[in-house]
Amino acid sequence: MNKIVIITFIMAAIAIANCTTKNQVKKTNDYSSLANIKTPKKKHIEINYNLPDDSLSMNDSAKKEFVKSFDKGQIVYNLICAKCHNKIVNGLEVVPDFSLPQLMDYEIRIQYPIHQERLSPENLSATELDDVVNYLRYKKKSGVHF
Image (cartoon, rainbow, N blue to C red; front, side, top):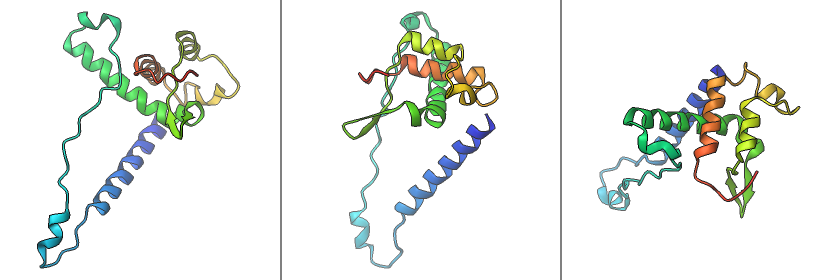
């Protein structure tokens, strides 16, 4: 868990540093250069998940918890799982679609030799693993099978 938190903070710091250096304007008395600066448009936040089938009966608090778990799962997946599981399709990196039996194998920490260390409880808590499975189960389908 501590490794994930540290890596997340480092990635955030790098992203912030990149944003601030790219958007700096050289200070001069000539303001004509400001005309070329484009104001950022509000980005539409794309929802990249499907709510569970029983979502109609979920209250707002349960939906918020689902989204929170989904978002955490996406972060953990990207940090721990993506480099081995993602596929390259037409030059783009894609998160594949896992079947329910495949996800259940991961949930019970099936011991593929390559996963013995990465999926150990010391490196990935039960809650984090649940979040990853939640992410993979309810993310919008990519059409690329694992």
